[in-house]
Image (tube, rainbow over all chains, first blue to last red; front, side, top):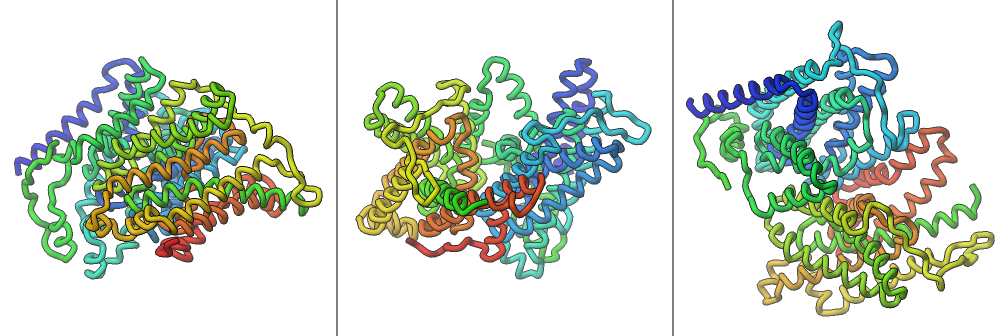
Length: 332
Length: 299
């Protein structure tokens, strides 16, 4: 299939491009690229929820922050091995996502947005009020985690580690959305009642996806703690959650890797605009508003696995997976 | 903890609750009729404070400054509705919340462009300075009583307008079945703008009155907006009665938990619990009812 071959080539070119960044030599750009990959990982998890699960969450920054704090607290208490601290961060974020999701998924639509935003704010205040973990000042970590005998203090080595982890996350996410689980979840997004009538309990499927996305954000949080050696409470703020939604919209939802481009746009926009104006957030807000008002569809829709919504629903009925049908491009 | 402190905190809670009500009415009316959640509502609260501080400094008279500032917030509200929100009515939830989030970012930065990053301060008007004894041994600031009173009057006026005028009947009808209202020949676009301006004015009023109690700075309305969303989740979406009762519950619960919890739980745990109390209350309400306490009830 030429289409999937083209997509494979596209992925390979992307990875090659990303792998070439440290060759530029300036560690500043390597660190910037690391930041893009980490934020992109969270934006990807938000896209799983929005683009595939139809759940518009306004609270993903909370799980990002939990991952960062758990990793940071463990590191400060002598658990320096990434093999312990990072899985702990992932588990903690997933566990919190389970509790928040179980409550928030009792609602839907606008209420779901408001409830996720409110619970994220609760988690924000929780960390803000704990003085032993820095309170409003955030938490500083003396050094990065260790990867067994391997040190990741080198920015270049850390960058490659983040890149490999992101590729794994992208691979797992693509596998997930194309699995039967992914078909059910997308079926729920398109028509929850029909999928429920077919015998798939929507609540459990949505909650599982919510936990998976939380786990990814938790990993990204642990990476962020290592990247900056300082956990700012900004990581959990509601603006941060909004920024992730902005990255998803700028990079196109329902595409898995589009939001990583969105994160790149966000980080580069910040870098470039803040050079000539301290009010870069004004222009980022303007960018989001203009993007939404002027373009109705997605910009990078061709990255999306091309399946008609009805095909996704049909697949949940136990039908064989439909062949990848070329779909009319809907570029704006 | 004495009875006096409890009484004082109860009145503070009442005042916070009425502030939240002024905010929640706007959000819930806009949701009820336009089916949009406006995250920029917190910005209108903030702009109310900034406009009043600026107008008061220039005119040296609250009597002139308040109407000017209120008019300013209403104009901003109308422009917002016409330019940004109207194209969003037919769009997805994601587009709507994200566009209004983008507006919040813009407003938060715009005020620092105009007024700088230093917070602005509003002083309590002289004739409301001082305190009265509301309960044996409890002196209470007159200003806080006054703004609770103004908010109550605004709420009562709103009740009268919604229930006893033609416009109010149209708003209630629009909130139930907007297509039918439109089919009956009502200019629904005008109604949308009107409702949005009404919500904006109440948010601006809340911002102006809260101004002297806190410093007015960029983003000051954002935590209040999120608390307002909690009110609406608890009270039920689109219900004004729910907004009223939800506001009082959240306002009083929040302030009371701040004095009661530290007495029940010791150490740092109490600080964490105090910050989380309102959200735990919301979780409990969600367990009891998925749609809040008063959804479906119109009033």
